[in-house]
Amino acid sequence: MSTSVLYMSMSVDGYISAPDDFLGGPEGHRLHEWFAPGGKFAEVTGPAAQVMEEMGADGAVVTGRRTAELMDHWGGSLGGRPIFVVSHRPPGPAARFDYPLVTYVTDGIASAMKQARAAAGDKQVYVQGGYTAQQALAAGVLDELHISQVPVLLGAGRRLFDLLPAEIELDIVRVIDTPEATHLRYRVRR
Amino acid sequence: MSTSVLYMSMSVDGYISAPDDFLGGPEGHRLHEWFAPGGKFAEVTGPAAQVMEEMGADGAVVTGRRTAELMDHWGGSLGGRPIFVVSHRPPGPAARFDYPLVTYVTDGIASAMKQARAAAGDKQVYVQGGYTAQQALAAGVLDELHISQVPVLLGAGRRLFDLLPAEIELDIVRVIDTPEATHLRYRVRR
Image 1 (cartoon, rainbow over the protein chains, first blue to last red):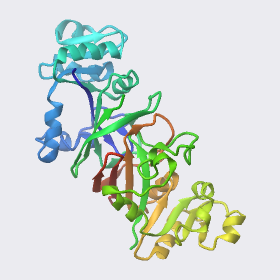
Image 2 (image 1 turned 180 degrees about the vertical axis):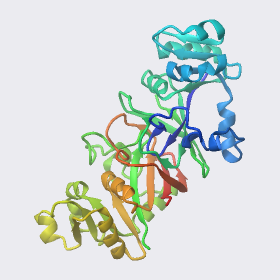
Image 3 (image 1 turned 180 degrees about the horizontal axis):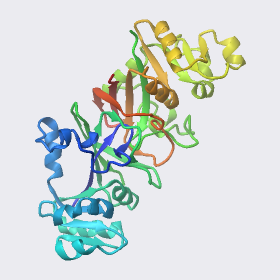
Image 4 (image 1 turned 90 degrees about the vertical axis):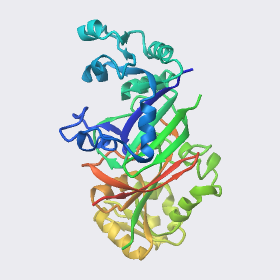
């Protein structure tokens, strides 16, 4: 079955964005410098290139509404891959009329993940957004976490983990050690 | 000059203890299993043995009062090494009369660190406790952080980083990859 993976860049103190800086300021966000130095996407070379390759190998995307709308649904698809948006409210006009690959799922994260897995086939499901990831973890439908841990203490911002209802054991699948970030892949133990 | 290092075991979601479980329950704390499985200290073998060796190579200890009192000042010294306790209040009777190697420092973390560095000579200063570490970071007197990142999401507890006043850049000095924990040594950039 398709594996669901959260990819997230996180500071050592657990933040995934500055308080009012969701998409990065004019210089781009500090946490994204390992793949977008100075706010501009650049070719990632060295061991971290494998991470970029894996991130691009997904067959479907599950995301929260906030991220989806902030990104304008990535213009309708992420490289041709279908997008499943978890939301309790129906989609706005753009998502409803202009984006055939965007599906709003109003009956919860487990349902969204099931539909995304079916669409992804053998490929992985790319989970977007901290809130969505925590919901997926709590519902037991997130298989892996890929955290690119950036060597900075931000001191403030939005945390990746804030809503977990219970202890969750992980297994370390792989560690990629680069000066820009430590790339940690964890599998959720069941 | 002597290097000051915080050693801390931390969950992937940033906790260093369960909410009411500072010293671990009867089974010992999940975060300490990499060196004390089932709550009992055991010889650490493999690559993490280097971490234990480094932790034992300090020449002085700086700690907060809460940790010091919870640990009864480690009976007066940590393996013969002097202990500097940062506190705004004078010491209680045991620390005052029975423990000649314990010094209470009432004029702040920078002063405590200075005294500990002098006592440590060429060796490192071992910084104990999350609150003390954050104060040392904020005051610019912490040189390195050694985080043993344990593959678990605790969901609740006391966080290592909660009080930082500003962004602090780190450099990754070394990563030791073991199944029980990822040992990350960072240097604070100045």
